[in-house]
Image 1 (cartoon, protein in one colour):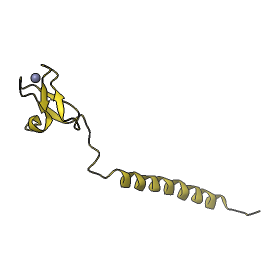
Image 2 (tube, rainbow, N blue to C red; image 1 turned 180 degrees about the vertical axis):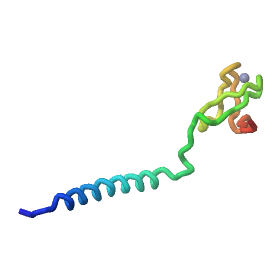
Image 3 (tube, rainbow, N blue to C red; image 1 turned 120 degrees about the vertical axis):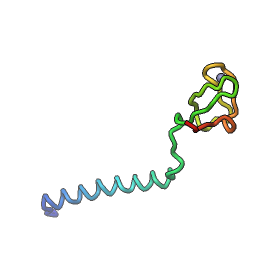
Image 4 (cartoon, rainbow, N blue to C red; image 1 turned 60 degrees about the horizontal axis):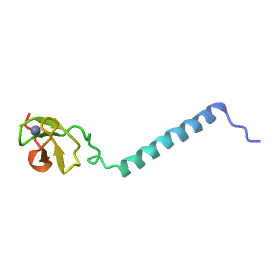
Length: 82
Ligand SMILES: [Zn+2]
């Protein structure tokens, strides 16, 4: 039987736990580059018909105004001039 000191056992447990967290952290960083994750609800659009400002998903090509219901092109009506 192998005799192991309690402090060495705790040290091994600590190294394995933190090593696992660091490996998962690097794996997540490699899979998700820093510029790729964006909050999708932060984009503000302005309706071209009623000039109402509303928030919608970033990935949509065409957004719907929440006030008048008209469709707006997200590339033309994207506005961040607050
Ligand atoms: Zn509108």
